[in-house]
Length: 141
Picture (cartoon, one colour):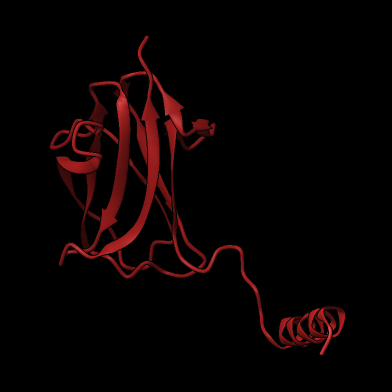
């Protein structure tokens, strides 16, 4: 078989496979960040780069998350070891029917990024299994 025939054959297979499957951009919950959330303004200044300080962690899902007790965990990238290391963790209680949650500073958690760096942020269930995660960069002032 010539190269052109092989390429054509593979292109046809991929095309037919695409017609038979459903492709979703968001198949699981999405975690992202903003400066704050209010019922009147919604999400204020969504980004993945911020200055040190308090932030709001947002989680959005097409389906109910099914969580009661959960946590937000920060792991900070250590360039010396080229790995992420545990930084801090915050506990929350939510309703299992929620599809859209904002986690922010409250009386039991400060939810602040104190130092510049790259962080991996997780929403964890009550067994510390990852529900959603994202990266964020905290830049110096």
